[in-house]
Length: 474
Image (cartoon, rainbow, N blue to C red; front, side, top):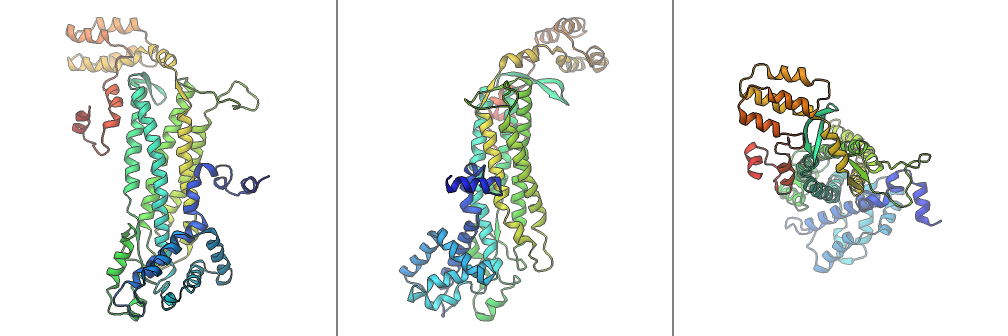
């Protein structure tokens, strides 16, 4: 047995074992190593910022060689470096202090950097480093999620276009309803996923670097002549993050909560898609491609189960339970600081890992689907009562009394065939043109704008929510 196999078998979390390959790109970001790497990056950038500040005479400007050494130290941070930090932490019992001592060790290798040793972690509290590290982790993790969501949107878009004109019986409350097309129903999810992924992408992650309680106390005690808030703002924004000028010891995580809430809503949309596709499979609207060697049941050989959509649904639930907890927990802290956020934040990787697994499971399921037009057509062809809506609406137009009630008497709770519908229409006191139009209507052609809505989804712009925008796009 290889070391990797043993690791998979003994992993406590399925994300590090059974599902590791499906979310492997998140491991360097959200692992213990990843957190250390981002901390090192923030500490080094802070030192480089201080060394470039004219008012800090005791922290002289660095030569190009020294600056390159520091940049390479951050860029080349290795698992061996992380292991050394863990050795130091065994003594310090403090993870960020261990990072500081690690950097001082490495800086001591360069005589030019000796004057800068005590400017490592200068005027910083632990959370000046951590809040920025976590913000950068979430920023980089978001890229992987949005890439997977974009793939899911593209696959659904292609299916929406392919099945744009495939009539399908709608079901509201599980009962036959006005018809739609398969493409239009998939286009609904494309629109929702586009909108919510954009919201997630646009969440501005905030950061701070203002000392023990957010007032730059130590900064001004040492160097009262420096505009520390302005320096802090430039530093935080240099990472591509938003600057929060008002904090306690911690940045209050409101932006992290927005991120978690947006991601949770995105996952819920995928979960909704999973359940609809599962139901379409159970109705026979989709068949699933056979995979050689795959088994659907340990006792029933005939079964081809929709396991990818079920897997996705389950993972979305796990992800959302964590995301919703983090969204509610993180913005709450007793007075100027309590430590309950610290352990909670370490679960971001789990929440994002299960989210990524959700998207990839749904994608795998989509790749196995084959439309069964015969089953869909047979279902809608046997349901002429769904034309009752169209008939009573035309009757309203022409002033026929109690049109709804008349159609209710004919159709409610019963199956009505083509002959009964045609006989009813023939006896209506309406203009011949309207009567003929209703007589030509069938369950397959009573589709409104469904075909156009599905066929146009690729060129639609997310954010065009007005009726005018919808009509223009069609």
